[in-house]
Amino acid sequence: MNVIVIVSVVLVVAVIAAVVTRRRRRADSTHLTVADLQARLAEEAERLHPDGSVGVERAASRELGRSA
Image (tube, rainbow, N blue to C red; front, top):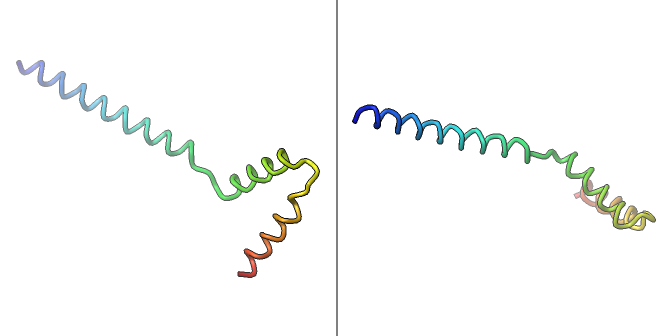
């Protein structure tokens, strides 16, 4: 009886450790900096508007953000 309890406790602790480790890795891999997000936005804007028609609007919105 005691062996079954000990094995059960060890298995529960192992499962909890695996879940915590997996959640920690997932959180680290999804962390993005502001610079990463800005680079992605610039790439997406260029992909959607290769002629650069959005560039003036983005520059103006950046200037408005700085002056506010």
